[in-house]
Amino acid sequence: MLAGIAVGGFIHNQYLESDGKADVAFYTDKISIATKIFLNLIKMIIGPLVFSSLVVGVAKLGDVKVVGRVGGKTLSWFIFATIISLSLGMFLVNFFQPGANMNIPIPDESVKAGVVATSLNVSDFVSHIFPTSIIKALADNEILQIIIFSLFFGVACAAMPEISAPVIKALDAVTHIILKITHYVMNVAPIAVFAAISATIAQNGLEVLGTFGKLIAEFYLGLFILWCILVTLGFLVIGKRITHLISSIKDAVLLAFGTASSESAFPKLTQQLERFGCSNKIVSFVLPLGYSFNLDGSMMYMTFASLFIAQCYHIQLTFAQQLSMLLILMLTSKGIAGVPRASLVVISGALSTFHIPEAGLLLLMGIDQLLDMGRSATNVVGNAVATVVVSKWENELQ
Image 1 (cartoon, rainbow, N blue to C red):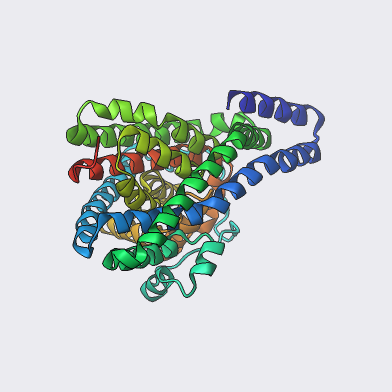
Image 2: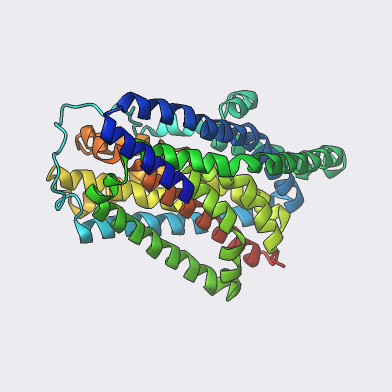
């Protein structure tokens, strides 16, 4: 990461001196290939890993009653954590008023940001959850659809253990094979992190930290507070072992931070949580669900960014309107699974719902990568804490 910052800063300074914008574009385009390769490799294994691990996890849980009990505890924690994250973002942006205090030109309201908005359509949302084809869901990496099919498949396997035993054994073997592939893929991770950071700094320069420094600092302060809340909640459940947990998952957190994708850390996080002492069946069940329903860092960012843009255009939203925005963001954000910049699509939908200019997204485009790094790392921490908490509640934590 440090090497990426240094090289990116050097490239950007060379561009400033020689006005070689094309040279910088050439560098960022070519160096980004390494990041794209790494993320593509992760996407290659994430669908099969979620399917095999979740089916095995559900089948090992046993009957539908156990699945329902563990699922109820898991979703209860997810909803609680989501409400905390959204509320914290709303509180901080109202407290700091970053949009009202920004002394920069505001894009004209007629300008399009080039982000296709998502609208809150309950019918489309519900129908999208249920896949028409598991093959298509796997091909498109539709994590939420894969989870639904896996839950049905796993429950059916649990209902007839004698017939499904060979299938479960095979899928368990597939899970371990994919984790071995993950070990190979992780060898590319340092290069991918270097490429991602150097490309971002080369394109935007360290000067972006000066222009938007206060906004970035306030957002990262919010993430720090969110980490403290999550760690405190974890401490109440597992005690002093929470510090060991944070130490155990540091590699996955740094990987998510460097690549700005919590999805990239999923395989690594799975291994580290099992080494920490979480039951394989709980990890296999809770973690895939968390990547669709428990994106704590992304949740906080969405309220923070949406209200920031409203403040920039001097649009006053009542408390009731802000609560409505929280609900909309909570529903429309499910299934984004830590894909870089996917949050901007969800935010665009919220902006259009409340008649806030979409052009405001242009204010965040230049620094979104830097913000995405922090929220992706926070997503990993949130899901790790959730998995450990549910494991403790189920007496499955060694």
